[in-house]
Length: 252
Image 1 (cartoon, rainbow, N blue to C red):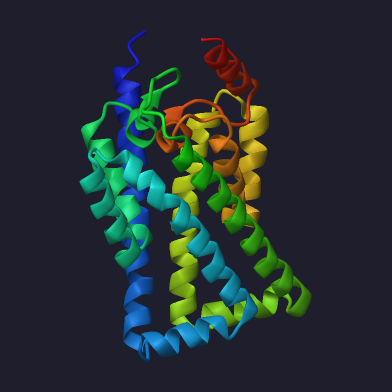
Image 2: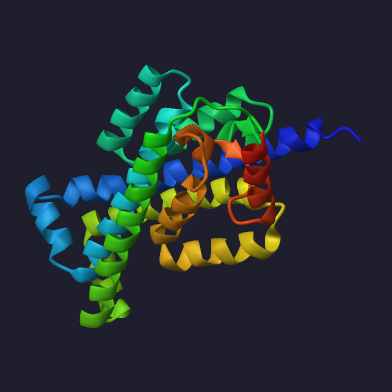
């Protein structure tokens, strides 16, 4: 059976979804710019409400974990660093554009988003992997702390009322959701052969946000030989195959 037409259709559909998400961000950005009172004032406004602050923490957590992904995605360290700088300056739209560009250049969605097949050798970099692991763990702890504080001090309905009536907070929320969409696609590609773990993880991602991303990256870094090995290899992080892979690697 020729899977090429199916792969092409799925790739085009994925690119269309990412493109639609990108364009959907423009009204939020336009409203925030039109009604904004300057960056310092907008930041003060965002942190003045605990749930808006929680959204900011969620967004920062996601972006912090996207940066090493973009560096490893390359294709060279210099271009990867350039994409990171753009991500820091412009936010989630850069990640979406990067994904769309790679979908245009590769034959399948999996190759575009998680480019290396399981068993692919990558350059060892244990210190980088340790740094990734500790960073992901710290981000998960800090984000959990911020969310716990928000839950203890204000109801979600009151927080949502604040966010939806302030354009800068609403833009931040939209950016965070678009990042979660990309993360969900990334996790699905790696875990699609382990549906009993993939589906609950994606549900948790939707409801808990990037704390799930942080824990996922932390788990991916355990036993990995490099940051590239942790983030860019199409190998299940949650499934049994991952453990067997590392046992075979140790034996070699």
